Image 1 (spheres, rainbow, N blue to C red):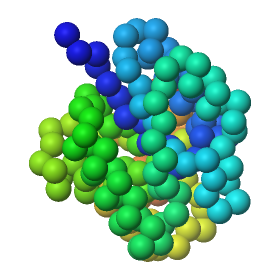
Image 2: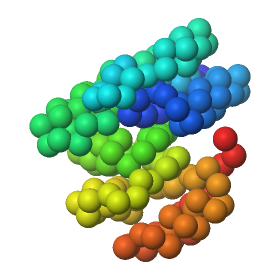
Image 3: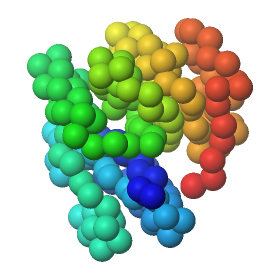
Length: 177
């Protein structure tokens, strides 16, 4: 029987979301899951925390370099194409983006390839003072993913109140980092 396989997508493996993903991945591997991660060592002034990547490599995580930090049109669509090629080559049980840009890419690639893979988005933060086009883009992804996980009840409540479009609370859950 083949192992269950998750593809996590994190723009850059660093900060709290990087620590969370490292902890989660190691726990899932102990429970028999195979883990692949889409990330990039550097994007703009963001740089991965090498110690986190080394820790994950030691437990057998496979990394794929795809940049979902950069939202420019040319970069985004080039990276969506890379993701679609990966999804054609590999079989994943779950797509698990860690922010809305990779969630958007997952929705597009999954739908183009007509795959039946759930997309479970985890949100760690949501910046203030964001341009309206960015909110529109991210809200589209929120409406299209299968489930949204938050890292606290307070964050979930504040986030859902701030959205210009309604996301059902039943489509959400809180997970503890």
